[in-house]
Amino acid sequence: MLLTRRGFIRQAALAAGGVMAGASGLTGFSGTARAASQLIVSATTGMIADTASVIGGNLVSVSALMGPGVDPHGYRQTRSDIVAMARADLVLRHGLYLEAQMEAFFEDLSRKGKVVAVADTIDPSLLLSHEDYPGRYDPHVWMDPELWKTVSTTIASALKTAQPDQAEGIEERLAAFTDELDALDAYSRQVLGSVPENARVLVTAHDAFSYFGRAYGFEVLGIQGISTESEAGLARIAELVDTLVERKIGAVFVESSVPDRNMKALIEGAAAKGHKVAIGGELFSDAMGQSGTYEGTYLGMIDHNVTTIAAALGGTVPDRGRLGQLQAAG
Image (cartoon, rainbow, N blue to C red; front, side, top):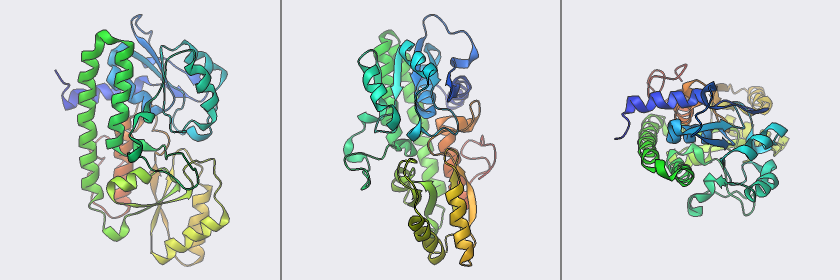
C-alpha cells in the first residue's frame, strides 16, 4: 500500500531531520542508536542522502558528507569521512565528476566495498555537455525532477541489492516519492509558466541551473562555469553587466554554497551604467537547506528555488510554496 501524500511528507520531514551532515564528518540517522538490522549508508550530497532516507525508510541509517552550504566541486574527504565510508554497508556518490577532488579516493574505495555512482545511470543523450569540459557532462541533474527520478530508481536498486528481503517496501516508497516528483514538476511548470516570457532569464553565480533552464524554458546565465573551481574573469563580468543593462534584467540570484562577491560586482557594474539590479533571492544550487527544515529536503529545495525564481521575475506563486511549507514566500 502506497503512502498517502500527507504521510509521505511526514516521512520526508522525519528523514530530513535524520540526515545530519557536516564538512567534518558523519552523524547517524535521527540522532538515535540505529537498529542492528539497519543498513549503514554513506552519501556524498544532501540530495542523495535525503532521497535514500525517504526510499529506505527505517531500514537505513543514512549520513551525508556535505551539509548545507558545502560546495561539492572542491570538497575533499576528511579522515573521519574515510573511516565512516570504509565502515558503511553502502556508499552512494553522485558521479558525473561532481566530486572532482574525490575521484581517486572513490576509485580506490570501489575496489574494497560497495560504491554506486547514482547519476552515472542517466542516459547520456539526456545529459548536457559543456565546451569548457570536453568529454564530461554537467552534473547538476537534480535541478530537473524528471532526471532525478532516474537517480531515485538507481538508489532504490542499490538498497534492494543490499536488502533483497525488503524489496517490496522499498518499491512502495520509491513509487510514493516518484509521485511527489511528478507533482513537483507539475507545480514548477505552472508557476514558472506564469513568468512573462521576456523575463525568463536566470542569472546566477555559476552554471548550476542549465537542466532547470532546459526543463522550464529559461535562459540561464552563470558568472562562473559548471564548476565553482573555475574563475570568473573581469571580461565575463563585464559581458554580463552589458547583458543586464541592454535587456533590462532587474533581478539576479545568489547561491547558498557559492560566495556572493562576483554577484556584488555584477550589481555594482550595472549600477555604474545607470541600471538597478536587485537580488531576487538565495537559491540552493549544490547543497540543500538546513537539516530538519523543509528546505533541507530534496522536494523542499526545488520548491524553494522554483517559488523564489517565479516570484522575483514577475510570476504568480502561492504563499509558502507548493505545500505551504516554505519558511518564507518567494
